[in-house]
Length: 355
Ligand code: SAH
Figure (cartoon, rainbow, N blue to C red):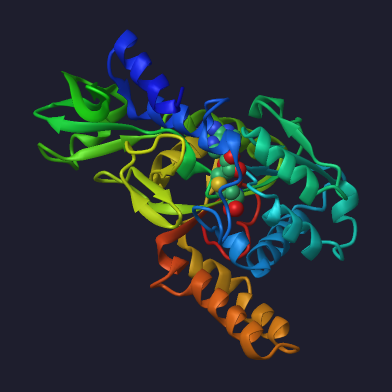
């Protein structure tokens, strides 16, 4: 039995499924899911993320979080959390860079939110010196100041897609034709969650919703609003999505998302406005959405690159220069990726970001 057989059987039983149900099965099915079964990151994997490109990324982010902690009076007990920590590389870089910030490590309890057992094992190895704790639900976050980072986490959350037809919406669904999975459309319905999209879309436009992102923002922003802290949400996407951004990546190449379920990474661009609105509703302030390149430059990534470059020569130096360019240049990740910061309305915004 493969994941595809399992999906075909489910469709035969229950009818076509939403893109969100398909994504959840493909990414997190306990037996066949893409993240459940293996570690997809790195040059040998299917895709590479900013912390896997260079240690500089996590280092400057660590210093930003430590500055926010210091600006807020250095609470002597706080939660240092990450959503979807992958191999644990970003958290390891954050912890190395903050090792010399007096009091920071002693006050931090490290909490990780990770669905994949394979990646939890990997994180446990990477962070074995730091005693992290994993939570299954974000409501298990202790009532304490929360300093949180999420890099390429929200793009992995399941989305639903809707095609505008008149004043209503038809959901894009995945069904079967013989032994193949195919896209189709559900009946025309009105969607409360899309009420505000009637004004900025036309007949035939496709919009996306990420329902699971909202409760995640409600809990984390709620902790920050009531106990202090900050969040840095980094992902590719924009303020407001329009069009089909559902994509599959395998061995660094784009592939048909229906082709090999469970064997390719599935993502969608992050729609930041609903995240900011949910944070605001939870009583938290948010920053302007800022391009990753601008954010990293403001945090001093170029000075950090120069310091790392000093002892290097030859191919090591070239790799470092290429990594700096890849993270910051507008034609590489610098503009495609954006950063949204959350902070308590009485405090300063996280360094590198503006209100
Ligand atoms: N932040 C890491 C990894 C990004 S890949 C990096 O930048 O390298 C996405 C991560 O989110 C993986 O660790 C994946 O297992 C995790 N993830 C995906 N969906 C999740 C969910 N619904 N709940 C918790 N973790 C999830």
